[in-house]
Image (tube, rainbow, N blue to C red; front, side):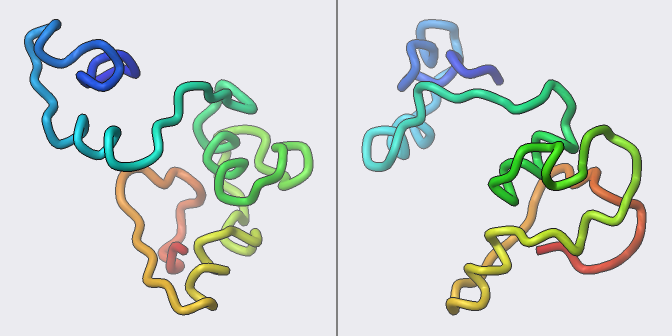
Amino acid sequence: MGYGDPGAYGGGEAIGAATPNMDRLASEGARFTNAFATTPLCSPSRASFLTGQYPHTNGIVDNTARESHALPVFPLELQKAGYRTGFFGKWHMGNDDSPRP
């Protein structure tokens, strides 16, 4: 599914794929209509999102396995403030079994 596929962004039934739940989330919550990636690679992009730092600052500059679990990421700060956080989808930041934020 691409950016324009949900109904809230012009797709939905117009392209033959109704997205009522995603449309409801968009109408009742925040819609992000202008976003940019810091890099075209997945691991550096995720690390930038999670740390708020550019790849050259957080040290994740490619998709090679490296020590990424020691980075200060915002989900850990949310946990400290009493929030429950979760992880789903691709992680692709390291090959060990250490806990993820």
